[in-house]
Image (cartoon, rainbow, N blue to C red; front, side):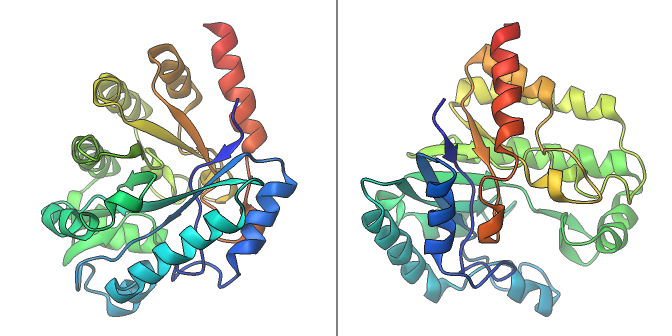
Amino acid sequence: MLKWDGHTHTRYCKHGSPAAEELYLDRAVELGFQRYTISEHPPLPDRWIKDEKLMAELAMSIAELPDYLAYARSMKERYAGTLDVTVGLEMDYLDGAEAFSDAMLEPVLPGLEDVVVSVHYLPGVGGMRCIDFTPADFAEGLLAHYGSMDAVAEEYYNHVEKALQWASRLPVRKRLGHINLIEKFRTALPELDPGLVERRLRGILPKLESAGVGIDVNTAGLRVATCGKAYVPEWFIGECVTRGIPLVYGSDSHKPEQVGFGWEWFEQTVEKARTER
């Protein structure tokens, strides 16, 4: 199994760490990783979120994008022969603003190697709302809008399916980011019907298979007190193994010390799935 951390962040993340990228990469080398994808949040449309303070924390500006890409490429060159560093982005699926993403990606696609496509936003009270900011914000902006956790989740998975369709057109290696991010605050919000989650995820599996889109097996939920589990269920990993859907471990590290977090869980879960099948 290739030891690959496929979802990581940098000093260009406004809600992460200002640490130099070398600290992340040296940690990856120390842990024996062979490949490491730098996948920062790219710019968002102006006022995508109406809360100006929160908006400023979500992504880099348009002006920073060329600098970020040059930074990532410089790391690729610096670690050549020691660690396979790949240049990527964590693209947000922007419902109704796909043209913004298409236009932003067009000039930079030739230099990209990996794209993680994630759903972080849903329509809610007052416009687009983050699904992963705080439990209180989720309740105020989404529960109040949809009326129940199950209704929010149905819309979330609708967006995941749209994200999958959009991602399928990208001419680079691509995967869906933290497919069950909707469960980030599961112990702090009303219970979500597990049958609904399984039904929607099972419906996504054949679409992943036919689209050639992989899965970011994101372990960040294991370090979130209100979640306590990875953002990809073990049974879903097993189904991906059976169907040949690419699985790429992702620490979703926002600090150097988070690089490699949960790798052992990922390795054991995938090996178990392979053995059982």
